[in-house]
Length: 167
Image (cartoon, rainbow, N blue to C red; front, side, top):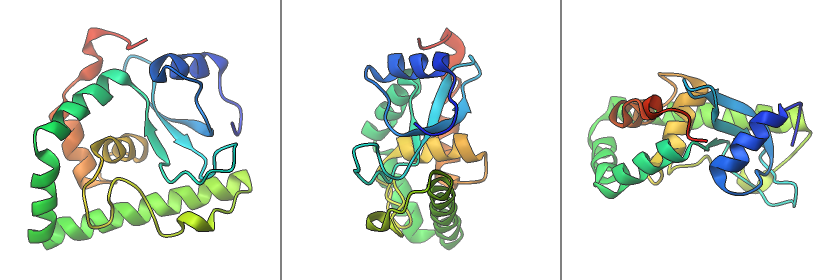
């Protein structure tokens, strides 16, 4: 793990994931309940494996709701809209570029070069929709407007934190 990460955050993330977290660079976003819900990960895991998922959603409650969305056909609907809506497609390509820029910055801070994943973001970007968890993670970590489909996922999720902390 890079940088200084609060041990309480590490414990919360471990409880959320049900395993020891790997390659955490920093907490990317906090849930309104106070726990981390997204971590930014280094582009190469400690064991040397390239890891393109920069924004990793850790909240099991949000992840479960997103899994339900994925099972409902939302990804196909979004994919179809990408093919038909040039403005949406351009914004989604912008999300891909922002994702790559953030990963490059994290890699530079950590002194990591990962040529194996150059130009590859995650979640299907820039022209497919493969993982809503990634899109939501980017929208949370980089803020509204960073990923138009990630924003839509968050809108469809509703306030997953209202039942209290997930761990």
